[in-house]
Image (cartoon, rainbow over all chains, first blue to last red; front, top):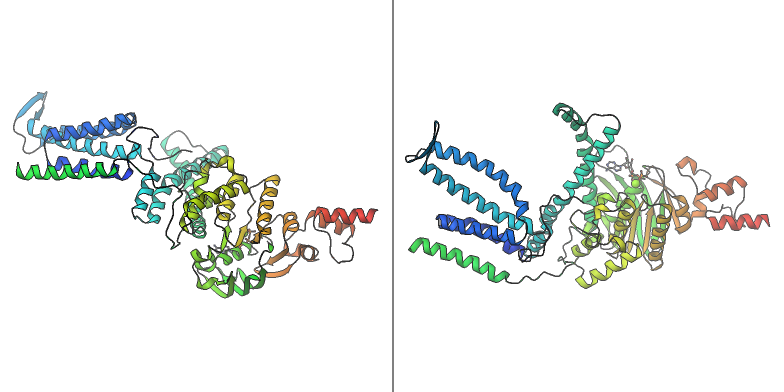
Length: 255
Length: 281
Ligand SMILES: Nc1ncnc2c1ncn2[C@@H]1O[C@H](COP(=O)(O)OP(=O)(O)OP(=O)(O)O)[C@@H](O)[C@H]1O
Ligand SMILES: [Mg+2]
């Protein structure tokens, strides 16, 4: 079955890290460069994230995401480089366009931050099964209902898309044009909405009943089919990140 | 021992103009295998849902009369409480897939995790229902990738694993081929023989005649009859109520042969064969 999750199965040590630790890595990677606004620090963290993505063998999956982000970042660089109000020092000129040092440095800071955040998110998203993350959070006390909603979205949306394509096929078989110009496509799409939306509403009602009779609202303490996964080094890694953050704050204040 | 007592049950869906169930009264003993029959919209599904508390708790609507299942009065207990005693399998297997589990095995575990069954027992129960419903070979498949029939078996397995005393099934074999339906009926019968009370709404009259101890005939939300398959299917007004008797009954009726010493027509292949051979010899 098609899944909308980006999770890539693998056996690397990154895959074996506790989902909660990977979750913690995100605020860690975001906070450190804010506490210590040095280019070296940002480069170090980006290097670390990229190294982990490489080790997990998922770096190729990040290319489309980074590609999209770079497209946006280029406009940031151009606009800041040319028009930032503090711009003073001319760096170079291409025809009528002048690039300034202040703007470019600022754009570089933003670029590094964004790459850093995306890298940290990618580690979590690409190497963690969504259901593992949710199960870990439910065990930590998150409501199982919220957990259900999160996990089921990953399965039920592809199901709806499959229904959509079945109906499209049926309509195409009855002679409806579904390909070609945008207008033709929109005309083909509109009559789909009725059956798909109505169908999913009815499905939702029936599914809610089916969940009820399977004890979804039971007050009993929940148990789990799988034994709680024990991850090595979770505590050490989490403590390590905490200590580094504290160290960064201390450094910033006293040095 | 009476497992289910229904007294003067009346129910109207919100926004509906007419009663879906109108003064329904009957009782069912422990271990009985009961069939519910009636034409489309007769109220079979509504009655099934009234036994697990979806009517009235899920839908709301106007509700009168009393329903007791396994000692609980439905009106005063939550669906979660009732579902520990009464399991329900719905008509549509697709919407019974939770959508939060990646394999059939995990899917069956869903209900057991919710009601807090210990881990080791979860595994035992799953293995046993996979075997009972003959779906071991797909236990690692994604639930949405199953065929309609396999999905239906999984839906039944998921409920049976929760070990209810009372099992309510609403057309549980609509997506199964004849051989598959037969297998599922056999599995349900084996549970019935272990003392579980079974209530099953169905349009396949041959199956009802073969497996049920008693048959509840519904029409426009009212109980027309509640008796043995022989008596119910021998009624002269069956067609008027929108029900077609099993083919064996119709053949014997056309030939005018009744079971010896009774006023009933045969309802199963075996009965018809006995009567016809007995007559012929
Ligand atoms: N959710 C609902 N809201 C309003 N009315 C409903 C709803 N579900 C069923 N009804 C009405 O209740 C009556 C009984 O319907 P029910 O679904 O119980 O029939 P059924 O015997 O199960 O039919 P089928 O053989 O088609 O499954 C019908 O008149 C139907 O229109
Ligand atoms: Mg029905």
